Amino acid sequence: MLSIDLNCDLGEIDGLAGETLDAQLMPYVSSINVACGGHAGGPDHIRRVVERAMGLNLAIGAHPGYADRVNFGRVMVPLSLQEIYELALQQVLVVAQIVEECGGKLHHVKPHGALYNLAATTPETARAIAEAVRDVDPQCQLFGLSGSCLTFAATAVGLRAVHEVFADRNYLSDGSLVPRNQPGAVLNNVAQIATRAASIVKTGDVIAVDGTRLTLQCDTLCIHSDTPDAVVIAAEIRRVFGERGIVICAAD
Image (cartoon, rainbow, N blue to C red; front, top):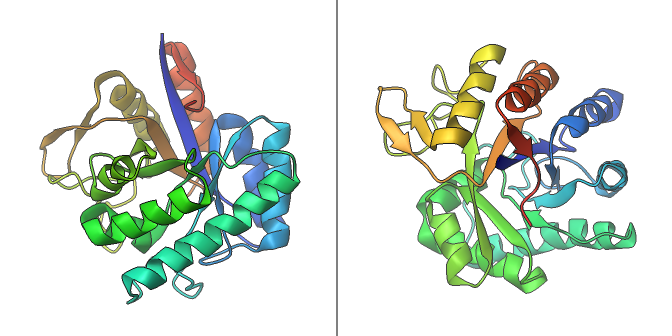
């Protein structure tokens, strides 16, 4: 029987609407990535997300990003490698401490937005982030774009690399994501996303926007909480997976 981790970025929308969305999404996924206070979130919000996730036995990860709330961490900020290391270290420590105070243990780290994309293609950035994660907890898993510099760096520093594929994003022929400022970057057809997600899990194949067939290692599949109809998408993915014998569970 096939199994896959289904992860979702949470704690990114302030107020009641954001907390309601988080609560609605959690029952459909097996792991979550909590905004660390850089691009979004804050200690109180993190704690509420963590407490709810622990009640559902979800794997809890930190989701560090550029400290740029205006651009939601989706625009690259010029930083030195030491600054990137410190940014990742401090944000991950915030979440790790809150998880421990709630009686749990941080499971993984997944960078956010522009930081994630830079780490996917830049070995030095990837190494700085991987070293920060290792220095917080060498048992922590590191999520990165499948086959990218970040997954390579994770392995190089002794972390478990988790190769991530996106259910609701389109790919270029080189295996990178279509930039969000380009048409078709984000998929929005619920049935298409769910069917595509099941196909990715079963075959490892993704069709890029130019028709190229990519074969990607898929250890975890991501859906974004800020994608329109995210809850409907998550529910449909779980339904389709159930029909096709795919079990949703976090990686050990």
